[in-house]
Length: 442
Image (spheres, rainbow, N blue to C red):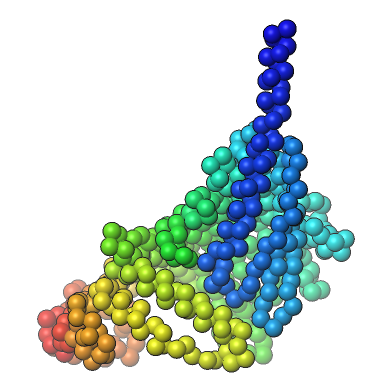
């Protein structure tokens, strides 16, 4: 009898757990939708977004219908309904993870006509777009989305035209009330074949790890990598000015960015562009290309203020009958003074490439060093506190056939350029309003 009672208690407990997690899931789900709607990032976009949720909680599962309404200026609101089937935890049989509060499968209801159009693209694939979500015990959430590959042929009645879209997958994990996220993006690429245009995009991967510092000011790390990018545009017969054919190929292209804030609430960030090989007309142009741009000593509050004002200005332009109106620059004066007073620094620590003529290298640093903000309000006085340092090293063969070639011997004889076995070098300095090149005043 005791065993039966024990088993009964266990059975009741197991049966009650999904009901309890269902209550917790509903609370977290509605909170996330409210947080998303109130997000400062969404307030910066040129449309109004409202999310109305109809939530029906059951014992082992629930349903939620999100009515998402987008309103653009001078246009009727557009409402899209999204259906969500929510399975209660703690044990989950689908979705990104096996344990948690809930697993969610999201679908957009389609009419018969829309389903027929999708069937033309994805043929026999019944669910070409899939979205699964997970809500963890601590309120964190994960979204997995995928798009099946497809091929379109005979576009607009042209047998030679075709588009091949390779499969796509993305995972985004949110934490801390949607103020922190990690994202992973994988796409096998795209190929477009047309009479006058050919595009090939190889495998693309992207990674992002960001956190929200102030309102919609996000800091962290981003990385995007392209295996191959190829573009080929044949000259149209009616346009004799365009050379034919014209093609560009970039191999192993990557963009890497990082930003952070220090104890003084000053932001620094850098972005690096890397290309292993660049070709034009199937001929090598450069290899091992690297360009890094960095900003330092940028006050976070001023950056946030400028970002918000720029977003407001863009929204006003979109909604205005005068799209060419200029912003009121007086609104940015206080922010600009705060930025300049923090002694900001702009750097290009690396600009380099290997060319057929030789190696190209350059670097640049621009800084403002002045504690007296009154000096910064006068453009003429501002020149006195700006400091510039740059170094340039390029092969003479690279400019041998340019209009600058005739001036090189003169500049070498004057000491402004040093010819080091075919490499032209100059060190440029601008301090206290004086410009020097290789130590000689210009």
